[in-house]
Length: 283
View 1 (cartoon, rainbow, N blue to C red):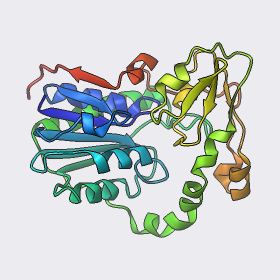
View 2: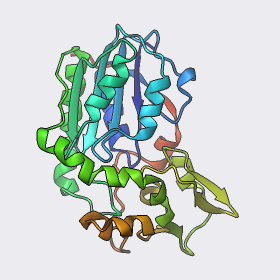
View 3: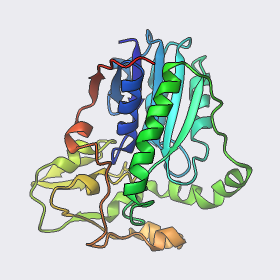
């Protein structure tokens, strides 16, 4: 297929976005960045998309590594949509630099505000009954603009965000490999392996029918959100306690807190690393 969208998705917002865009542009191949980039080249694609969440005011490390190794058609129409909560940071600038190294650039960039999915840090917000319809409408509008190959300058990192990044985000990036030391399972774990199958970084393996986290986690919380028995728990890792920031002190998972994932995306959708969307819409 000559249209291809690469995505990173933990709790489904980005996969839903990629799916809706694919429908609006008349179909596309959706490819998870869990794939080997050498096997999913976009060398002959005429439309290339990247959809991912914003983590620590940037794109996920797995997306960066994937794009660095990916072969693309530099003459293709290239777009990026970042799903985010409050600050999109430097995610578009990072992608533009990765593409520039390949002789390409972004033609269209858009940040899409979504329901917050970091249930370990805070409850989902804004309210889903308001936000989900907004997200769905926005995805359709974005898809139609991409279908028309509209050009849209990507959002840049604000002056204030750039100034705050070293103090607020760099400390978290320095201890990211410690994050998954906070995960553990209680006696509700049934060894179903759903957590391992949905993990977008393939960070989880099973040992004696229990998940083991292997320290290349981006904190997407897919394992938590899609666990069918709510067996996965979390306690603040020592490295995060030492940061002593407002967010690090609040890392926890109360029993009654909703474990959000996009209502249109099931665990089985995240388990599929490649999917062809046959769109029939024209605008």
